[in-house]
Amino acid sequence: MARQLDEQIAGRFPVGRRLRVLDVGMGQGTQALRLARLGHQVTGVEQDDTMIAAAREALAGEPEGIRERVRLVQSDGRDTGVHFLPGSFDVVLCHGVLMYVEEPDPLVAGLARMLAPGGLLSLLVRNGDALAMRPGLSGDWAGALAAFDTTAYRNRLGLDVRADRLSALTATLAGIAAPLHAWYGVRVFTDTAADDAGLPDDLETLLAVEERAGRTDPYRGVAALLHLCGVRG
Image (cartoon, rainbow, N blue to C red; front, side, top):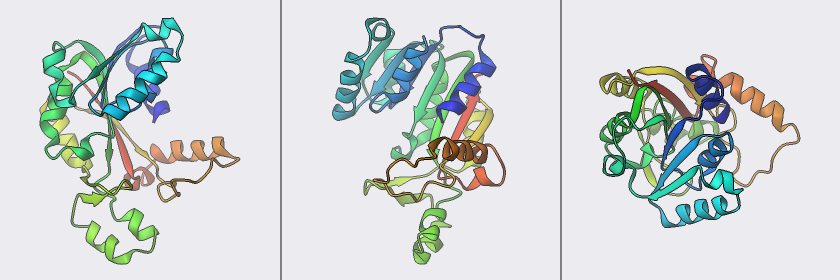
């Protein structure tokens, strides 16, 4: 996903330009810190106490120059309008958040309002068109059959959450003046790997396969996650 994001950033902005990045639902700050290390000015928003504490701890271990480029805000991602002016950012990330939101459209619209014209909106969502893949490949035939007719599922944390269909999000992005520019699949072949599985010896080959599949039909359409990139008009 990081490679996909970098590809979209490189295609939209001049090389060396320091971007204003907003990462909503940043978790422990993996992407926020990575982008700060690349020279960008990053604001991370996270509501969960444990996650933002982890992000602060990770940030504290960075050199001063990187720490100065990162601002952390503890808040609900739906409250961006309270903290920031419209058009304040060049790139807005919202990765792994929409599955926890019952009505995602207002959140996505709020994120789009944070973008300057020509800005990039990056969403990572559970693929609602491929929910039958995980139970099916695991031999859970009843679960696979039920998954065809729903966008609800139980994640690996044991939480009941929801997925998004590509067609619905494409329509949402068009309606908020940030139409879909590119989309990728994420975790095409590796979604059924055990959570405690170690890294394989041929990790680079695995990543190359996943990256190729994530941009190639029909493989990307059955990925566990979708990475959608919209551009503010």
